[in-house]
Image (cartoon, rainbow, N blue to C red; front, side, top):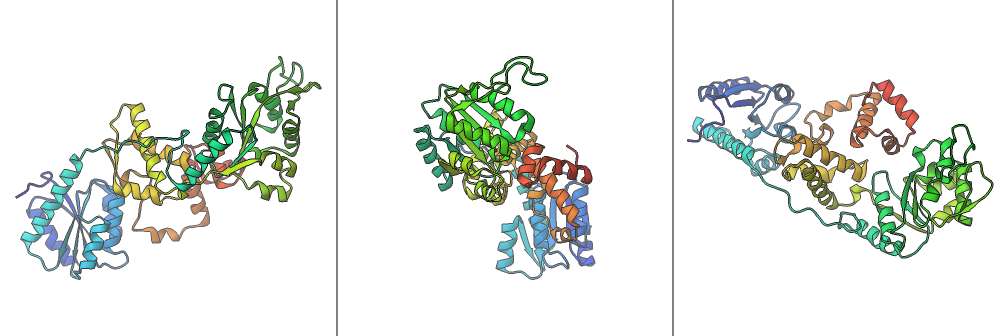
Length: 450
């Protein structure tokens, strides 16, 4: 006979029949287990949240929330808990479904005490073996131009990089925030004849409007209050190389006119000077907005759009990249484990499925942040579904979450997006499609602190 996991292995029995609960409590207590009972799933989840449970034994048919829902909830929220299904409505279909959802054992009523004890001991044995399991990830995927992936969308981007690098033409990169537009811009630059010259990234949306002209074009001494010396701008710094104008759609109409002049004349005029200076700079622009739509609304100059939209490509969102999600997960896990001097972790099948099914509003940046947190916080070599953020796990009580106010839903979504980008308000505002001021106001109203 296999020994229990510990002398006080804890077991939670869930059944809507009081007599059945009493029989289980009496028999399992006699065998030396610490037994808890619950008449339904809601009560069971309260117990699970309050203390560690080694084994959950649950009935299949129960009012309100079924045992099958409880099985999935336990599997996706509690790493160190095994599950056994019992039912008086035994069928091959229900057995298969229970096993797929995570039940380790399945018993059909009526069963003898010996059958019950043997099934419990088998489940406890599996828990012991799972806790002792130690395996590693497969070798991380190789990158092309620093891009990880085999999906058709990313291969199209790789082909574009090779073609764009061979010409000096202006490039426009589009795509959602976090998809890797700057990475693609760097790949184009460092694969081009300009690779030995500077690559200068500029976040147009992150520089106040009053400072952007000075930052881009430079200023002469005395041009404005605080200009104590002449200073070159980003265009002069990038001379001979490439300037990356990220979020070009966030520039004002007056700045758009100045950028148009640079593209047309290849000259910049420093703030406070009337003497233009010639620059040899390749421009790569990027945006997460629909530029043609902004042109129609009059928010972006049509002539500037035509100037930047010479060579263009869209970087696909992570949710459309299929198996690339798993390749990126391996890549980031290998990198962060190496930085921390930790063993390369293994991701359970449940985690990999959850990562694949996620919509990833923050795209690759969000996945990178999540993997970093998982590797940092993991205490062993196996990362399982309970290690994931709460919003990525299944909950058996999801129906009750529909009875919430719009404000509660909005506050939760804002918290989720902020967490996905490590609290970066600019990136969060981009994903939420609101400005930073509105985001700050909502955070204040909902009491959201970082």
